[in-house]
Image (cartoon, rainbow, N blue to C red; front, side):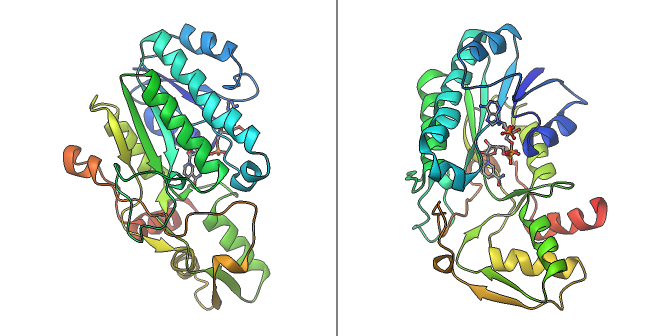
Amino acid sequence: MKIAITGGRGQLGRTLETTLHTRHQIIGLDLPETDVTQRDAIDALAHLAPDLVIHAAAMTDVDGCARNPDAAFRANALGTQNVALACQRAGAPMLYISTNEVFDGTKNAPYRELDEPRAINPYGASKLAGERYVQMLLDRFYIVRIAWLYSPGNANTFPSKILAAAKQNDGLTVVDDEIGNPTYAPDLARAIAELIETNHFGIYHLVGEGIASRYDWAARILQLAGRGHIPITRSKLADYPRASTPPRYGALANFAAATTLGIKLRPWQDALEEYFTSHR
Ligand SMILES: NC(=O)c1ccc[n+]([C@@H]2O[C@H](COP(=O)([O-])OP(=O)(O)OC[C@H]3O[C@@H](n4cnc5c(N)ncnc54)[C@H](OP(=O)(O)O)[C@@H]3O)[C@@H](O)[C@H]2O)c1
């Protein structure tokens, strides 16, 4: 297939290209050449005549989105409308990457695909608006919600930040009341590679199997890095006022892809081990 990937130079875009390029022709698109918020991006994208568009571009700075909700909606909602219109024009299906932050985190159990979304911050609301444009404008789409992504060689991920903090401090303080699914980008890319072969369109939650608090994740990172002796103090989200409010219990359950298609990611602990053994 000829696959166009928006956000092609982002964390997920790069990982997808690495995984998909052996079987598919990949066209990576990103700022500054392709700005999905611009109307001319619709023509440019349609002109490529892709067989599939993976829309991974987004304003991903959640606190930045909270400080500037208009910018968040421009990029994440209206940008997604443009990409969906380009798919409509090209007759191509779309795979839209969405987020666990479309949920409010009050369920206290992992969210399934058809649980009612209710975003509680501008990032989540703008990504949810993007989902609605996809559903409104296209017949053939995958909406893939993901969470807590990390990959090798990226300084901006939670594992890299924990390791950097551990080098500079005698102890760390990490929240234990924010729950999610650590998701290893190469595992996610492999699951997406399987999903796009199915034409089984719909909404999917593709995340590392199992749940963790930020505290659990940090503790396992330090252990695997041989720094398990560094003490971690538990804290609460309420101790750190920030511009954006994350869903407290934002974990997702992969019910649809696992049940119908047999597509699932391995347990997050196993993937984290590979992150340390193969790539660092
Ligand atoms: N990372 C996570 O934990 C996580 C969790 C849930 C969902 N997601 C979703 O997963 C997707 C990929 O995330 P990621 O971690 O790969 O993020 P990323 O590294 O920030 O990549 C996003 C890419 O999109 C580009 N971009 C931003 N605005 C654009 C625009 N108007 N037109 C074209 N490109 C634009 C960014 O360029 P600049 O860098 O130049 O701005 C960046 O290269 C996003 O849709 C995100 O919402 C991520």
